[in-house]
Image 1: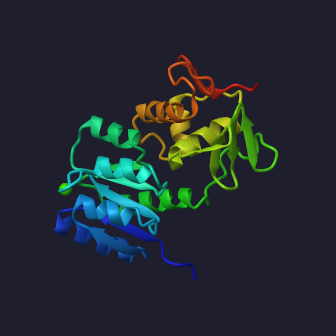
Image 2: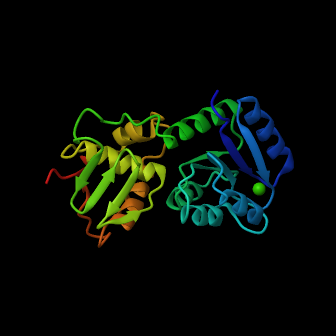
Length: 237
Ligand code: CA
């Protein structure tokens, strides 16, 4: 039998934390909890978790700060739990490298499917995006970028670039389908897979983040290009 996947819940409201923990355990996961930001960060950085559920408003350190610090070291999937409806919160969370977000209150069923989807992506069980199109073997080269789809790593000039799972998935998808242009909604469907649930800006935010990491000059990108009202693409040469 597979080893149980481990989920960290960082949530200061004990009632909510308990309900989450109870239900997530029932789905067959192992759960650990933290009730403040500092403890949450410390546990998250232990690297033993397969996914982190992260509340935003927390004592000692907020969820955004935790997200940012975790991303400096680890690519563990992070789902932000926000009580606020504000669009900015979602964009900010994704901008700091979170993989997903949910606005409270949400159903346990929905949470369970998001957890499952994010863990599957992270474990690489879902790497079938555009696989038939390009690439000889497991390495895709785009300019100075070397995308190793077997080790799920991206290097530029020999230096490893730390991308979140979604950033990686998006870059990889475009690289495997070089030359083809994809509008935002198509990318949401192919890379995020939630069929229209997301804000289209999620794609723009993720592209911006990737550009900050891979481009010499993010304001005049050479890798991921955008043709107005047609879509994002990576050129063939
Ligand atoms: Ca809270």
